[in-house]
Image (cartoon, rainbow, N blue to C red; front, side, top):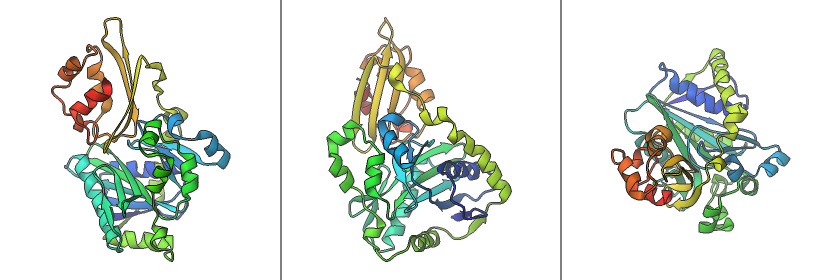
Length: 329
């Protein structure tokens, strides 16, 4: 795996690094596996399928100058600052994206274990130390490449993190606010004398066996891609309030939290479906699921029939067909 170097050490806004992932993924001259680390000033980043106002404490973020952006991967809302290291991994691989994702989180857990930590990767998207989350990850796919990115909590201000992010009610019902906080740890707890740059150098040396160097021209092209992440309509995203004939909220262990709005017409057929939440996508939700449900009679039997030729796990990571039926009804 090769490390991707920028031509300078400037600290840029978070969208630049998301665009950098896309750029190297779409550049066919790049090696098969690439990795880089980055840091940002206080920022909240939330998942492609989430509703911003439900997940982010916008008043708190505005008062503290915390920037807020949406990413193209699924998953939940995270907070990053200069004491947090962000990891990005891009792979050209024929394996399903979920397999690539598991391979990546295993590599991160192996790296932490090499430091003497009791680290493990979970079946969904976390890396844990002694049962507490130190890294949360998400992924998405473009033709020929898989992109995985995530946090590495080094010495993040956990108090600010918990105030900037507003977990959904169903998450809190299952865990409680204090329990959510107790699930998180930082590397500083285990290595009080380690400098963050020392850790970054160690991680790079463990995970990578060489480097590629981007040019000033590459940076200009990345900046062009970056503009889309700053667009207000992309950040705000779709709002499901207009599709609220029936709303269901569920949390499925190991899969994620779901807020589902189903609209039906006078014949009790589905006219629209909106599924938001912190789940991880392995396929295109609209083309593979939502579009085929439109016009279908709103009954479990009819929905099962409409889905008979697909496997929902190929759309939502870790989900079964029956779990989807349960959250729709």
